[in-house]
Length: 535
Image 1 (cartoon, rainbow, N blue to C red):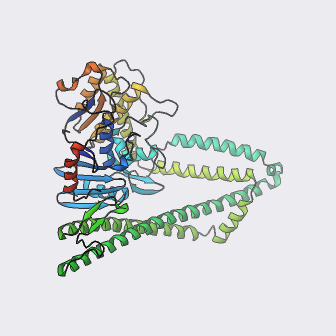
Image 2 (spheres, rainbow, N blue to C red):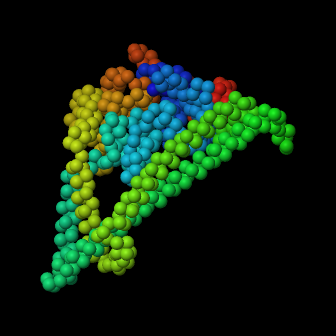
Image 3 (spheres, helix red, strand yellow):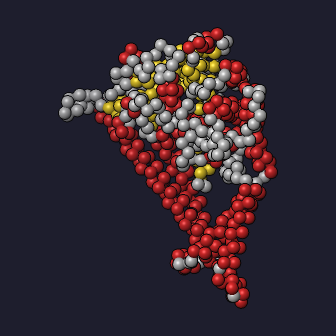
């Protein structure tokens, strides 16, 4: 995959960068605020990443157009807010949200890895994927993924397994030793609670009470399974209904457009207010506008909407199948002979009235049972699968250490994981070196073909000697490389003399004013080629 160009602009100002080569690119300037970060973030923004632009740049006022080349095919991707237009060959596709764009990306541009989230298989979000090949100059940490919230480190590792080709339908990263340690602590707490409980003061009823407690725990566990499954079915039905609504909406639009085709074959349509015979199609939130007065453009839009309908049809089929599986699971739970539905309801009422100690005891027993299940699940997986997963992370860490040792001969501390612990993070040049090592290792081990993009690759004064070694290591890779940096005064034009480096100089840009009126015509022409009418 190769980044060919990026266009940024609106009706009054614009900028374009089309000097990228397929090899090693270094974009630099003699000062900050020349537009390097805006260019880099614009590229990633068009690839579905969350916007992380400088606060002084009002990105919602602009259109962004990225041209990618993959296996000899060109893709023009235009983004405005969360709306996308894609041009491939002579075909135009319009998508109203990130989700639609993601599914198109998976089907037509590059297969996306699979992660398991909340017991459901799903395509990895693009904001997670880009962290395999992109490091920005802001918000980067060594102990976690960027913008962690709903997505976690475990999801990122899960994605790495998928990219390597490992079955990741379960969490291989979960340590059995950690689970056993947790179980040991829980058992100690349970013993202390039982000793504290008054029921143990009477030996003659201890067993009876414990038996009753275990019965309650068994009932509660069934109730918990019912409620979890019910909640999952609710979420799946919500997603299914949304997919059906979007599919139906797009089918109605196609019906109208096809009706329009028939009407215009026998007459002419004009606006009753202004008399114009020009008609348009607008994307969601009216971010894109297309003149569909011609049959050619109408056909393009119809084909684009058919693509969206197919995306939602596949999603509906997938969700329907998953709902069927979960409903069968629910029926199996309710049909078990040991626990009736009436008992479940009674258990729920009784458990609501338990004392704190009994409630905590119940929680402990459930967690111990859950841990036993996790240990059994992990242990039941094939030894080869576990070893392969362990090997992948070990290979990545080994490549990181090899990189680090080559860059800095004096280094003594070795990396032990692809993330640091929260209380031991790298900052400054150490942090920069950590991220560079990780980008390099991901490319070497996963052998992905995404461009490697690092904004401010020598931040915090990476020494000249170490910088050259960094370049040497990344020259080993077959990926397109795009680095940015700010040069010191004495380093002016240093990259012009490095063989194999395509240097792109932004030193003559005006501070805080990269976008200019002089680029507007080229920008408008690029939009025109994508049939987009600028506002």
